[in-house]
Image 1: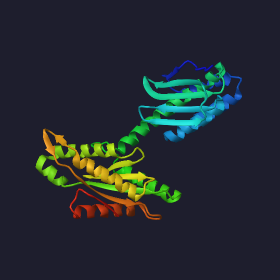
Image 2: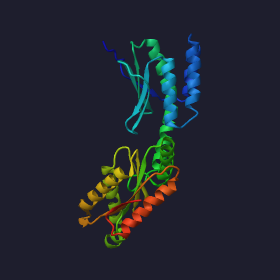
Image 3: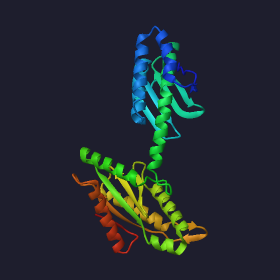
Image 4: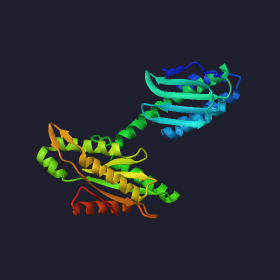
Length: 305
């Protein structure tokens, strides 16, 4: 029969979690628990990287409790980390600090958890809460710094980081990578004829349509002005061209109504596929040149490098 431990909330409101836990651990007869918990506490305080922190916690907690799997989920921030193989006996904890929801930790085991094992896990979770809160704050700050406030897409800084990462990965693993450079046609005319407030709304509408047409594995950015870049991992040029044509036709066919005015909007798109050994800047340059050719040939079309 499946045994699920009663869900609990770990809500730490007192300052100095490490000092609060340490006396209790010293009184315990389990010297291994004391040593492992202190080591874990130090490890968690050494980084603000959520991936590293939560991976470390999941791995270490699975040794200390013990259990077959430890997972962390935070739906608000779209975060999920997992270690081990999930089994039917579960215990899960909602993490809170001063009323703030920090996510959920779930552990699984082949057998029922004992009270001693649950006590160990709760002590470990108390040590996680403060470092986790700090890491989430840092994560949010980084996300905001890499997001274009108007379109909610990644900004130029986010693009610079992502393209270097994806080019390195494609070159190392010999996997395909394609890039789309998308430019709104006659955008200056839109600003001149309708005003910059309408122009901003057009940018938002185009960004929304781009997001609606690209795949979940693709990365979309506002490169600057009216220009956007889409990175398409594991995608050859032919497939990228097909997707680019779908994006172009959907935008051209859309009825863009802003401030009781219907705005005609089209885009031109340049496509390039990563070539072994080339740099991120060269990959962009080739897509940008293809975009230039599309504009030169009449706009509202797709060209491949």
